[in-house]
Length: 152
Length: 152
Image (tube, rainbow over all chains, first blue to last red; front, side, top):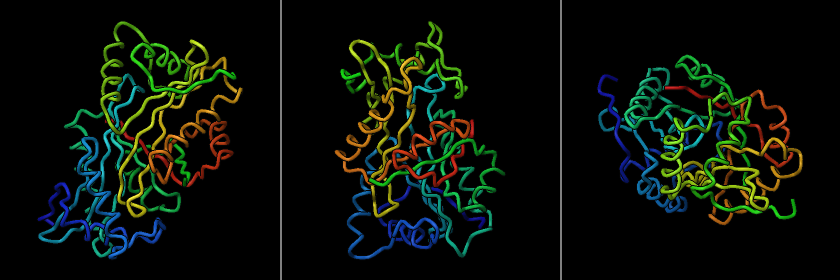
């Protein structure tokens, strides 16, 4: 745990990242790493890597990827032109949960966001993830909004 | 109303767009168009215009800006690499509300998102905006998530 480091994800981290998504029983996004799904993940990874407004991170303990999150920097008029940062796809390896990794990840999110001059962090969390909601509220997030989704 | 058109916002629309934000009594984002605030809005507008992943729209009836919204295209690993579109800062001119402009705006959002190959629309709405929630649910959005914010 003391060796936990954060860095931007590299192409060779992709399988480990998707394995973290696979462990997610609530999201129901059908994420699984296989020869069939790999090209779609590689294309999405390339799009994120190319984007100046997206950063995909991994939390690494030694050689092991134990967490991941994505940041999207959103220029916006609201709030007198305040830059926002959307936090997405926050995952901690199941076997390593409740060990403080999530809190350290979110502290890293804040430091990256502040360094970029952002005024606001935002994220959405499925209504069934009660533990996650308590976690974000402990970190000073306000549950002020309803989050809507529509599949196209 | 029959003349309603949608197009990307131009620099000369900026004051009219911020006037729509001024009418928003719930958001409490302190948005007001003045000589002091104008430079910040102009900088944010330039950042949005430069971004390949953000589009700011206006709904125009003749020469009048009657609505606005922003789209953010977010490349993402979740859902087998599905592109998401976040809808932000949806505003309809107060004097023109309940006339169907909002529904036509959201239909335009969907067509732009589909044309870009997006698999998912998402948005958040302040918990106090009960009318807006019913509106989004009528349009097929699912209120599946809690929306968290933290000011930095």
